Amino acid sequence: MTEIELIIDLHKNSKRQGPGSERETLKALDFTGLSGINNLKIADIGCGSGGQTITLAQNLSAEITAVDLFPEFLDELNKKSEKLGLKGKIKTLHKSMDDLTFNNEEFDLLWSEGAIYNLGFKNGIQKWADFLKVSGYLAVSEITWITNSRPKEIEEFWMQEYPEIDIASNKIKILENNGFSLAGYFYLRKDSWIQNYYKPLEARFDNFLKRNNFSELAKKIVKENKTEIELYKKYNDYYSYGFYIAKKN
Ligand SMILES: C[S@@+](CC[C@H](N)C(=O)[O-])C[C@H]1O[C@@H](n2cnc3c(N)ncnc32)[C@H](O)[C@@H]1O
Image (cartoon, rainbow, N blue to C red; front, side, top):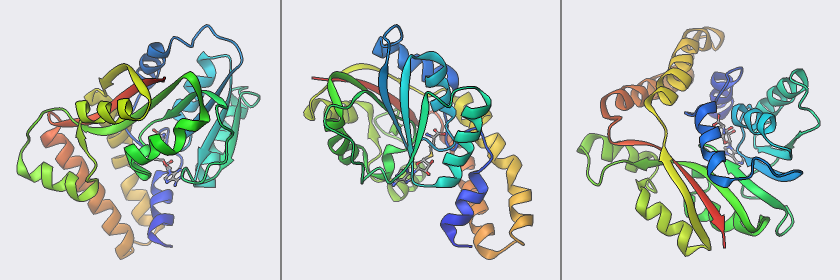
């Protein structure tokens, strides 16, 4: 298996592929004020197996297009939405987020939890903005520094992993410079990282290694994830996912 196939193998059959929670999806949704409105059109970009897609479908009158690059995750989402009677509300789309062919002003809401980093925050916002109606909302979560300075070890780790990591005020400036007004901001709680993401991920390491015959590549992936988890435990006062909710001007 290639590295990307192994990463999918590690993350499949899990509720989430990144930090987050139903509570925080609903909190972000609250900033949009879209709850009482009928027949919304929504795109959930980089949906993974659809933890947040299901929450949106259960709480809105909407048709949701859930997009991901990997069909394995979309298959899981289709099974879940079938089971929950949400098949009529969630349509999956196997496509890359940098190659979307939606119409201009097609959506009332663009959602993306922990996935815009694949394009970069600024690039993603610029690429997707046209798909949103005027006065529509964008809700994205993105790795963000909580403090203006931080220890060298964690600074160096994240600058290597994702050099676009920044403080929230700079991310908000990017939104404002690209035709959006901030409607709300908060960052994810520690529980959403540890209980909802890292603990279930750690619990899958042993079986993942076994079913992949302890290959060097599988061991490398586990080691990298363990490093990320250790660093989060040590430095979680300094970074989290910021949740940005913005209205298109
Ligand atoms: C950290 S996960 C977040 C998944 C989900 N939103 C969640 O919070 O559980 C990032 C997601 O982006 C997807 N992804 C990565 N590159 C992508 C691309 N170019 N186009 C669409 N999806 C992509 C991955 O398959 C994965 O599901």
